[in-house]
Length: 163
Image (cartoon, rainbow, N blue to C red):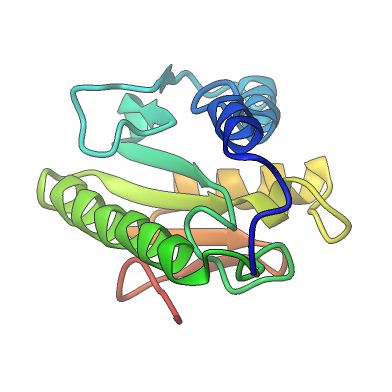
């Protein structure tokens, strides 16, 4: 199946996708600020350029788009066009996420992934529930965890992936 957009239109659309200050990052930033956490953003000196770094708690928080990082939820849909290309591209993102998380863990950081579906969409968590999960993990512990529409999940293997 061919793309419904011309190559120029598709290229323009792809260039418009931001890598910082996304809507999900802005929402999470607001919740962290409101809860009184101090953090740095987009630290290029750390593997994966984490979205949020909480030095006091030795925590890293990534906000992952469900499509780009292949989350098994209602927001992830396999593209109908150029399927092989997209699955390979997304697969590389997943492998890079695993590598970056392993590096951060080896450096003594704790790593949390907050999935896009927890932050936006019809099943998103409300502010109170999301803030409670964040505080629970940041202050409570656990080396690795993820937050999705069903809440927080402490992980023993990181990051989980079902392809």
